Length: 499
Image (cartoon, rainbow, N blue to C red; front, side, top):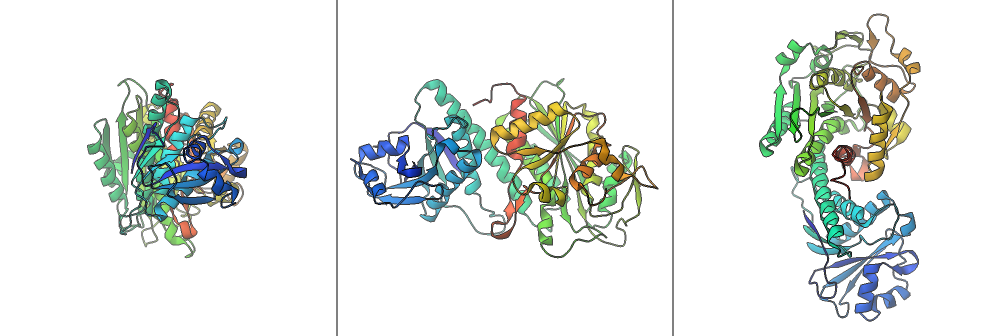
């Protein structure tokens, strides 16, 4: 989708549709008021009839508005601007985009970034509008002939000052890059498990390395992992006919001597649960168990699109978890790359088994920080629902940076405790630890397990089980947490990406 920002003349612009906002109690936004003045009160006369109140979700398409070159004007409800949040603004833009698509409009001028709000600056509104347009116009077309109607959008920006317009253009650049990365993650997540295998992920990562000059991709095969002693990771793939892959993507945007930031993404391309097999209901959604990997790969696309002046490494351990005569059994004991032994009490707690070896491997890069991203526990869905990701960390400063980044971009996380009190739940009579800690505090004990492999690292864990995909009628991958990870990385670059 082509998205740009310009200061246009609303009176003379020729467009299939102009989109402007109406606040609650039928109060016109600045752009809508301009159109009303140009049309000699045509819009306000419509409002007085009560066809639209201005609450979020309202919309009204107007035709043949006097004194305008635009063919149509779409009025969109924006609610109370004083109560505007990232999430409500996203809804406003998505509502507008969906209504344009319903009307089969391919090109529109959208003037919805003039909402007067102290929390969201107008340049941030430009960025969020760009991201939301990519989000709402996303279609999974890999295996289904489907494309959105809206292909081009111009965001009308009222402030003509050169310095502010420069920030608005940067905002669109960031929004386009995040939208591209997020939709990359969604494409990978939505592919079925018979196509998106560990080998497929490896080929995609290799292709990204060819697409971007500063990106180098390396893929380790099973024999190479065996030589490194990744017994924990390899125990998960034993029941699958699909070979495991260990993907390393190195982006070099900073100085050669700069220590990198490392992102680790869980890449279980299908999770049947193994011998501890899952119930059949909604098992098809277990193709989304690689959304951590997809989010990390999408973030690497965004990092390359923005050409961030830092070094970033993505590590993606990828396997398929299947039941088979060779599969791991409850009670088996495996040895991780770190040398610690693990008693597998439940083969459906497999994500932590591949992540722990990846975290140990990350030490070789001497990273500034490591963030692992995983659809790790159903307990996180129960605790936090589908709104924030769960966050646990062994360094409060890192946790605060991630929380602040999430608040800034609207892709939020919520911190949970990583106290030693929970470690006892992982005790095993036969190994250094068990891979589960019982029913209580499942998200926390999973992170406690990972923490045993991060003692040398500045580390944070994002459990995205509740936010990585939607079920029901809107079933599909969300592409989260690409915005959060990108915001965190941009903030490590200083103020040059501040809008």
